[in-house]
Image (tube, rainbow, N blue to C red):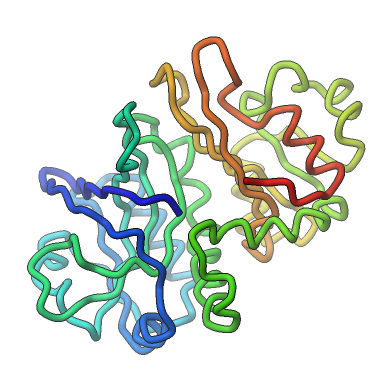
Length: 289
């Protein structure tokens, strides 16, 4: 992943931290797996994120013991190496002139002797949304994303060779398996050039279905083995120029089957999955990055 600058905003609390271009080591992963996970909640007690992340962790977290804490408690314990943390952060790409902030879901391990969040080793992370985009566009997928983080940690533990800067590229090897699944798509996340069944079939001859967000959430909760879905992270009209992440995730296994991004601009590229993405998927060829 690119070098990042993080800002964690939880309610009224805010501070900036510089993140290294950090890759977890075998020792980091062992430390994480031997720690207790502390899930940091937002200070807004009625935030949908708080409800969904607690629901997701209670239902799916298997790797370690866990506990839910406030941001104030996090401030008091983040330098304890026996503790690890799952939290939503705001991410600013260091050399990004647009200064766009993204919500990411992150796993960190505590580190002894550090005085601020800046030095915590980042074990794994996944983009959630732009910070200005409403929770309704992404919060319903949290159960699947929490399960992915667990799978990802164990994949790194079992195969350290995948730990590299473009770590998600590893999962594009699963692309060929999409042809055996039904791809769930939300119509407004698909380029207008191909957002009808007739148009899309011309470039993607495999099974797909235009669905609602509620149908995707149901597939995630029931762990439908026949479904993969698009996790799109884009500006939703809040920015004139920004990245659009396109991630396809298995409803049952929570594995990534495709990962890419493109730049959205006023007169160039739609905020969603493009025709060229479907052509790659149809070929099953790893031509990402």
